[in-house]
Length: 367
Image (cartoon, helix red, strand yellow):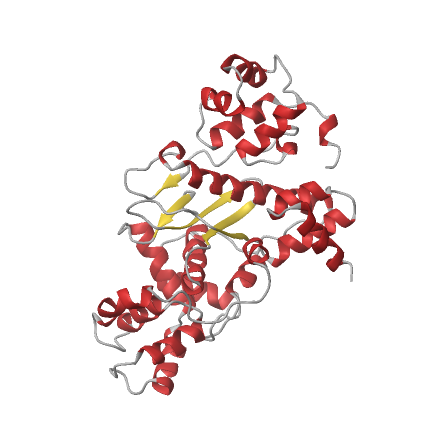
């Protein structure tokens, strides 16, 4: 992985990288300050891009240079955007496209690092067949995972251990929509989930569970906006609520923390319940309404106030970028660097940090 500059560029990889961002050859040419003819010749294999242009292409396409030097899968062909009036990658703002490509690049990098370290990822989750209701599927998965009726303390770690690649990256706002997450079951990299880091911690947890439902049901690769009222999204929403907030334990907790069924909880009561199940106040309120533990409409009357609150339980300490990439990815990447599989500059690119910061991280990992 460290001698990529010695290999030849694969034209098809240049095309895949450009198309994954929804760019036309002219847009690439304009960005690099060259002619369209030159870009076309690179993509046809007539000319080899000079090294300085190869680095520029890597920066423009949000790829590491080795992406151009070996065969790698493209983004899923049928990426479904469950967003109003947006059907294909070109319909999304460029900054959103770049985040999606960054996510796919991280999934690819992690898979290649695992291969280099001879630590293949075990995928333990299985896509289901049959007509399950959200309740039935959630109960089935909780039983398979040995969760009983207890809250899930670390959902991301739990599902990572099941073989799902999970990255939490900042996704720019899209007018009239909040892009909460994305998921696909990639032919080469397995099940993958992207979560919007701009959401509060409780919303992120709900998003992971929501995307987990899409993966279990083998739904098409999707970019999800929570507010859309369509069957697939309703199912994933209901699954996430049941999966994260099992009825038996929640009813018991409600009586202990609030009072008899029908009692009107204070915001502090809801906060304690939300903290127990690692969800947002909004998700907790809606779940309590569904179980008829609080009057219908209670959540709606408080939702504007709740949305102003950024988080409802403490997060882990440490650099934000480490939490976004996840402990497993960071650990694997450092191990790959230690064994000489990836360079310091490549490590810096994967981490999205400058070389000085990454050098310090490497030194700390040796102690």
